[in-house]
Amino acid sequence: MYFRKTILVFFSFFFSAVMSAQEIRLKKGDVTDNIKLNDSIEETYAVYLPQNYDAKNPPAVIFILDPDGDGKQSIQLFRKTAEEQSYVIASSNRKIDAASVENNIKQVLEFMNGFFRTVPVDPNSLYVAGFNEAGQIASALPLVNERVTGVLAINNAWINPEFAENRKIPYTFSAIVGTKDYTRYAIEDIIDFLDDENFPSEINYFEDGPESWPDTNTIYNAVASFTLNAIKEGKRQKDTTLVNSIFENEVAAIEALRRERSYYTAWLQLKKAEDKFDDYDRFDDQLKELKKSIRKNKAFKQQRRNWYTLKEEEMLQRDDYTYFLETDVFTANFENIGWWASQLDNLKEGKSNNDLLERNKAFRLEGYLKAIVSNAYKDLISSKASLDLKIYISILATIVEKENPEGYLSIIKLAGHDGDYQTAILYLEDLLKTGYDDYQKLYELEGILDLQMSNEFNQLIEKYGGTAKYLVFDTEDQSEENSTEQN
View 1 (cartoon, helix red, strand yellow):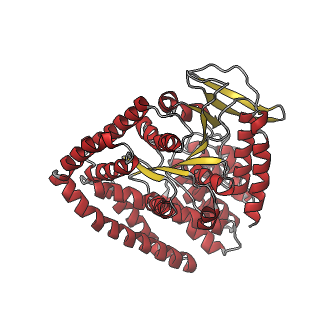
View 2 (view 1 turned 30 degrees about the vertical axis):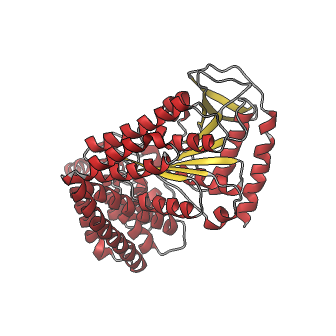
View 3 (view 1 turned 45 degrees about the horizontal axis):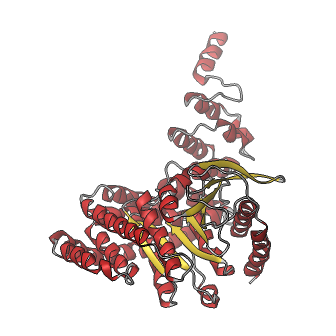
């Protein structure tokens, strides 16, 4: 409850700014970047105004939350949507803080406050889009204040059933998830829950993920659920031309999936389209013909049969990963490290499988494995767990994410502090082999000064292109020099 009360305090401040918005001159049809939130905060954001923007009759707004804080780049993906469906798009240039949900919420509301002081928009049509971990933040906002009209969650989402059930006014929930993303099933569960609660909701798939933004057409279709629901509720004027354009884009997305031979995903998108355009009888015949065409395809029938089998296999594999990770971490089972490495090798092989569904399953399992190891790593490293447990989970982290330096740095520090220089040097070289070049950070690791001053440590730094901080003696040359002096 503390979290909810805290957020409500933030929101009371947030919405007090809506009515005091002031117009400034911004170029229509282009992105205006680096707009300051206010004079006391250095953070900035980017804004896109559609060419038909009218401050006296302003359109709805979509706030984009990008974990990397690249507001201008994320807005580019929404430009087509903003123009054709008439939305103002605003995106923060502040990175998401993965460590604190409440701090993220506070920062998002600061961003919204700054925006509302600058750009007039329809205060009754506020939408929030979030990508990856920011999808969870976006998902949380309408659950604590009913002025948020809808959420676009991309590749990640969050739901609190109690908060959702207590909301008096349903909001629109639109999701996009890559077919390679392990969060797919969790997002589908959220869609099912919201459907049962009579919240307008839909899910759009694209053949990629998990770190990839969806294509502009998929974003267009996902935002269209906001537009169609607003028309249905009388918040927007009826526009036959716009609805026809939305339908054509929906059909184009289905056809694109068919060209990619993703027949089962195309089928799921078609079923979604039937629900989406249920109020528009003029589209029934075209949808029926498209449905008939897909069902006649032998490859579709095979994919549909395979899907259920592969999903069951995937769920069992995920259960195995969860169980064995808990067991191995509890016992610091170093002997089983090889098994985990073999799992990654198997998944790597699966990612190049000729069968699309098998290939996507391997990507999802790899993503799931990385996620549970990452969570275990964060929990253990920040806890009072034993040295063995911390080294074990750090080694496992280097196996599942070979390019992520955190696990290597952890081992170097832990082993060096314990006097196990051989292990520390081994993982230092493994880290440098990945291309890591933040040599200053290596010398800033605390508690291992003896290791950092050693010949082995400094020689490795120089071997991989860095500058040694401490004098380096070539042990072989030094040995020969000593021998000469003795003779």
